[in-house]
Image 1 (cartoon, rainbow, N blue to C red):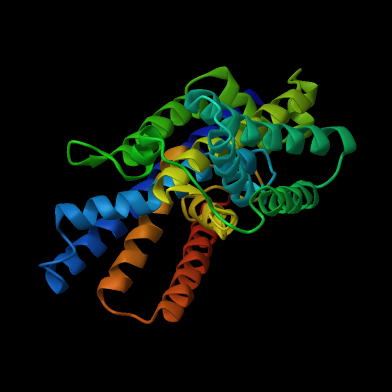
Image 2: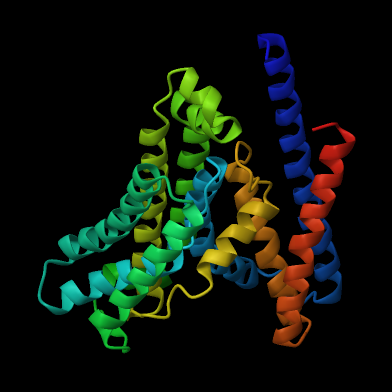
Length: 325
């Protein structure tokens, strides 16, 4: 492919991403407008809006790591149990009298180890990410029950409890952490060489190899980043639940994949943005919140979310085909 053709394709993809993010923002505004009229006294209140941001904070943090992984053409099914195990290990170490700061670091390290192991096995054994991360998910799940014996491990660390339930002024602390992570990750993906190489690997791994990119190293780094974010999310979740819980991360893998896909990340790799993932998580969070306020049966809520995911992907695919992408 010539440089001019590559530049044109990059420019077209950039415009498509901007239009997709603008479209999601417009949909969010539409939902806000409708709900503000239908549920004037409950939806458009500071309490409810911040409640939505709390509900999506942990999912968004983990989904940022999932986005990096998916951009390389991979997928991480271990994020939920990695999150759970990180919180459990932190709570366990604290219960043994370990310094709280060290216990938190060890909890995050748990997520890092799982992420690194995923990247190492995928690149070294040449196994599909689906298989490897499914395996490590079950390993992590087993350890959550080995350590806890099926029962939550409580923590009395005020710092950890504040991470999950505290506020800076009117803003939840976990929401502030989410925003910081989104800003840093967005910069890393779009504004420096690391992100461009990650996008190149997902776009065409063979071409990336031929251009001198160490594909193996970058894949290991990407899965490790996902592990770091799982560790951070696990500590926050432990604060929210007052301790480590073996069921804390149930469904997180599917929620993060859904947020990434709705936000425009391609399962085939090479395409996606962190801001898009934030919008995807926010869109799904707002829809769930609206359905709760409208007293829609919880089982139907799950159906609606599934329909939204399929509809968004179908519309996105239609838009791309019309542009010849």
